[in-house]
Amino acid sequence: MTRAHMWEARAAEGRGPELDAWVRGHALPALRGSAGLLRTELFAAPGDRVLLITWWADEPSQVADPPPELLARPVHRWSFTSTHVE
Image (tube, one colour):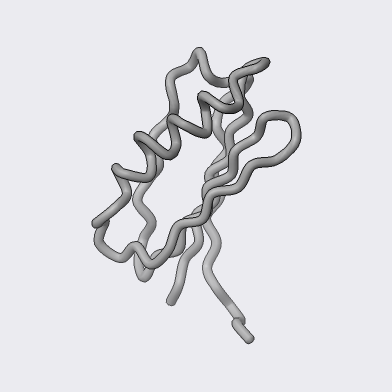
């Protein structure tokens, strides 16, 4: 069973590059080597949003919250279980 965990944050006004740098410098290194981690993918979107998707063989590890001053709102998180792959 493969699980995907989506972590999405919206940066405070003008702080998108800092939020992206925080994910690269803190969140991703913290996940590396986690048991069951299969893959990570980082996306950027309009509105200074950052999306991190991680794929797991088991239960996903949680991604930490960035410093509050980088955020426009609380982080959103969703977990999914794969039901079909082609």
